[in-house]
Length: 451
Image (cartoon, rainbow, N blue to C red; front, top):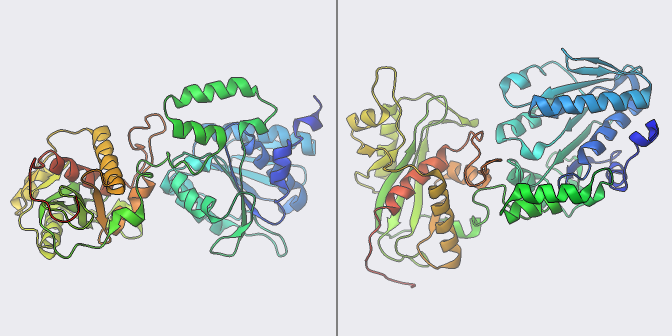
């Protein structure tokens, strides 16, 4: 193979690169299709066109994958430009024209802060479908560093597989905006295209062998298999609750007349938010909602309104007052609070402090994370099918409704939430309360309305 052959695009990559001059690209398809290589070809083109002013930034969430990209792009630059120098300490590659590629991971404030005061002419983010919510927020924030000379178009090119941690976000912001290969405008007026692909588009791998490996890696998860093999974004398997979560069914107004057994589910945090969700289990049928259905009626929390992953540091006494006010405005007298416990600097526990402030609180009787997610999904499914008690959420729970649809499955343990997801506090609080209520459900009762 000649050097030229080494950077010759496949037909799929040629199709992607046709849009590079006038569209930002969300290169979204199945695994093994050559998306990352097409993005690297776009970087080479960017360097060639802009010459000495080219300053592309290449991102990945983790360093290991970033170093692999850096090595591959170094070889491509040497083929394309005859020479290239890498500075490992600064994370850069400089080519003879004067163009400089900067490589960076992005995952937190520290990794973002080092870009302050720097200007880039293009942003190339690889494997962003697996970025956690916080990392994706920093990718968007780095767009404020994109400053090109007059008459030069800033370039954005992202790659993503479906079924990752950012599946729901990318589905909402890109995939759901238009059919594939059809340009659309984002809210800022930028023109975008999103592309599809499968491993059959990549002639440079043993496709039969790789398909077998992907199928084996997916196990019994058919949604994951379709996502990885077919690039199917309609399969929302990357989110724990979507499906069955359907806003048209599960989000309701607070019923005007209903009789409940109340419970408050809570999740404690100081650096992270402390949250509490008021839940009510229906004692009778209410319209289409079956007897025994559970409604998330209201919420309180100590979250930073600008970043729901951060808490204000409010003490348990403050949370106790917030819970009392929430219960009072919903006519819930003295409901029990179930929440995970934590010990403070003086050896007092959160449960103890809540009790000292007039809250009847206890720890979960049995913690079973996988079981509680299955229970929530079953209740959501019941709300859709009408086959039994369902789960509903009122519009008085805005933070729960914002975070629940994005709740990502773990990469290695798909039956549990991703441990790196840092906005799980409302879902955890709801789960503790629902599990506690469900374990104490009545076996008989009076039914009115629909059966």
